[in-house]
Length: 230
Length: 379
Image (cartoon, rainbow over all chains, first blue to last red; front, side, top):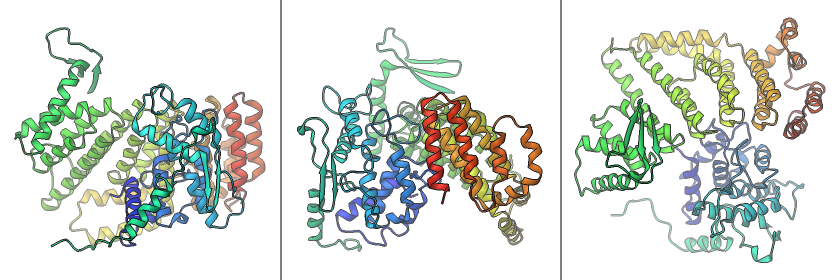
């Protein structure tokens, strides 16, 4: 059975290593689109509840496959923006659940993707300086609530630190600090300037320079053939 | 029927850390750091072909491992091999999984393994009866039915043990789709049996989402019921010699049922449930979401928009006897056929909530609902 997370991993790897072919992902985009439900977000399988992690994987995979317009972008935008918590500033993974630092990336990371997709469609209402979520509020949540005094980051106050939350809190912070669209770049840094992180690529979550280097490197390699080695 | 860890950091007495009281298994926590690496290591050595374990040992070791850490995929996979080789009864794994879920209600690997086991059981179910017609103890349909009931039970328990248990509700949907075949009967049964549960868990978005799944599946059923009826008759004719008699009878009965689903009634009931809960428990976003979407179903499904008009004539008597929100039910019954809501009535409902509620979140949800109406239904 297909899995959304695997689809995203596969698309991510295949596109960076230049082995992406239409045959490899035949039907994948359509299946992902079926996972979008009435809430506007994307669930693990068609029919399931919309969930931040799956929504990111689905959207990012579709962006890689250049099929993001199979989704109802407007209802997706409505769903994800509703997931930012008005009191905490961070994001929840699903409706009526608690805030969690890791969704700083899975959810907030959707907004750059949506921004780009809507821009490609010729939407004139898009901002030239901000993503469609409260960037300052998210930074406040991460910096004030998600840091462990001994180092590392976490889900919410009271939880213990782990590498997963450290990674995704930082990734979310990077998203919240940097707005970029084509030649435009606009920074919003809460607190001291030293808080500013490097920008991260919203599809792959590595720095944009690394994405370019990876793509360039693999473009220069011969594409492996499908025949088994003798 | 339940497992748990007993907080007990030191072994004070020279006795077994296993405690069994009233059919509930407890493990004193001090022993875990010895036991887990020991069994884990044993299994890994077996997998690496460095140390042989016989079938009984394997069963014991994997059982112990999984009760301590059910997300250990390798252990479940060892059991898959044992099941496939006929050494292990798949029903044992259903029981083991059920036990593991009492302590680890989310465990993804446990749910995944469960679906694999159920798939094995379904396949096993259909094969023998094709080969040897007749009685195999309980009729296959009866066996499936019992399996389904047990799965629904396991899902309920797990959902109660962890709020918004995505994996449990996901499994429940899978069971309805693959074991229950999404029959009208099961959809309606589930609607009524989960009604009380969601009323007791008003922030459980997964629970309410499940009800949306049920309603939408029902809508899907009624829209295509005529097609299904014809198709089933054709299938029955073709496979008359091969098919079990019970299945044919079952399919025909299902077709007859499908024609009698009162969709508007169920959607209305759902809306009433929502408004009652919204009133009783102000400030739960899930309830508002569910309410919005239920309304959406009502006005956007072809079957009900047709029926909405038909109800207009005789609907008034019923609505006057219902308490509260009479205005709302009347509004629904007068909705025009062309899938569009009368904005005036909706705004009046919102104003009513805004003027009478004292909860800040409730007010916010009502205001957001108004904006939502303008954006999504005003087109």
